[in-house]
Image 1 (tube, rainbow, N blue to C red):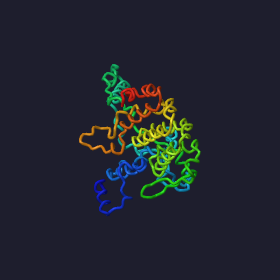
Image 2 (image 1 turned 135 degrees about the vertical axis):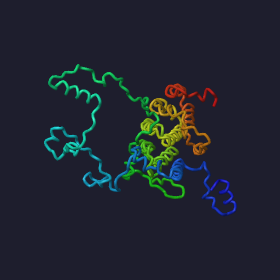
Image 3 (image 1 turned 120 degrees about the vertical axis):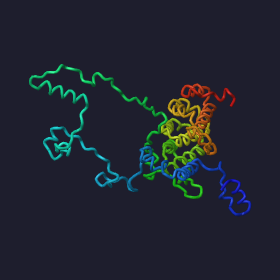
Image 4 (image 1 turned 90 degrees about the vertical axis):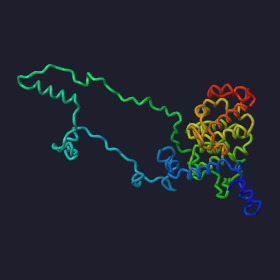
Length: 359
């Protein structure tokens, strides 16, 4: 229901206040689930479904069964890799005439027509070998005519093209049952920790949850996003020593060039900087590893094409990639100390200082 209709329903007693959820109260993982459901309704042809992305090789496939993958000799036909036959030499083919194709064995089948230059050269050769006749040597027509090469322009560099996502460590640990969490399937999904979050080893578990940010399949994505937010909220002083271990997972998530994954990672990066003191300054030496994808997508919002009369609902969900990158860079500059702006400007040349401009 729209917010106004839902509020009226609660006031009249037709709905309970527990089911009333305002737009800004949904968790980041809940926003991703709602976005997937919306895309499933809008693109009914399945062009943006998870199955289509797996078929393109952009998303890693899961295990064949709950017990793991099948042995290679027991794989079903649809899962077996297609092996190309090794090409044989001409001598091996002539030794086995059964391998000859019909066009090669049947002399009545018309052979492939030759080019004009080959026909002319063959006629000249026949004329020269005929008794009593000799023709002057001439250059073939293919050598005198200008060669026309089709030119379609330079190929695309593919700077904005999505890259295939590799399986994360979170997927491995979850399938082995080594994570101390379980999913509570209720009206508002959340994680139930088997131990207190304050007692966890942050050097071990926090990089695992950050590594799962590049997952697009649930429950891996839901566990990664929700678990990372829970650990950052209750981490306190234990987050700062783990910052160097979080650089590689953040870099891997941003380098996927997937707008949805990049938005989720940038939101979590903001949460990481605001989680404690000195965390923003600890990230300054790693700007060259984290920020290059931000330099590419800084001027691109969702959708990237000309909007025209299109209504962009990403503003309400905070899914505009270009605006989110600018906001993240401003937070990094404000909490990164004196050298933050110089290092950001080195990687993102189009960035203007928010501190100097008084934003």
